[in-house]
Image 1 (cartoon, rainbow, N blue to C red):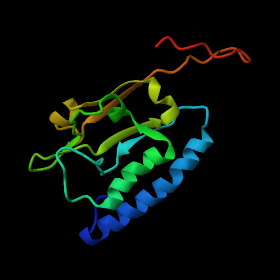
Image 2 (image 1 turned 90 degrees about the vertical axis):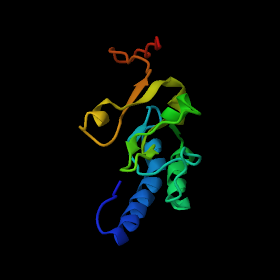
Image 3 (image 1 turned 180 degrees about the horizontal axis):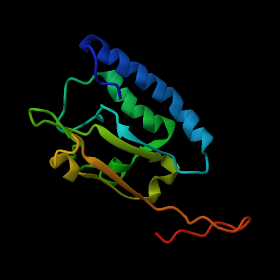
Image 4 (image 1 turned 45 degrees about the vertical axis):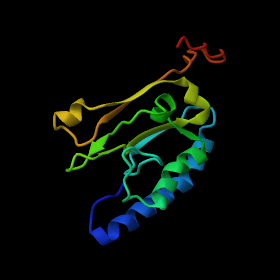
Length: 154
């Protein structure tokens, strides 16, 4: 997510990026109808109802977060932790934000086994963001051509 540069241009670049991503999401899912699609990253947006609330975010930023669900993607962390307050980045004042998100195609959301934030690298000063982890249960692929895929054991 573009978030650097002259202050008067940051939201212009951020909005342009969000518009391109929003337009691309349906095509991405359509290109891989039989596969799980995973979209992850530091999106520099928070979800509606974020705790604590941050008034600096505009309706257009919340709409960007919502565009993932509208396109057929599920927030993997929220899917498993509907009420948990978690943050992936902390500002200089100590305010927490859940900026980092991991979405999976909604038809595969039932295969999300774990999705969490690991703060260790951030706390060690290696990065300013928490690491997101995902465990997704997938059926094993058949090695023989023409065989039906084996069922998963997850």
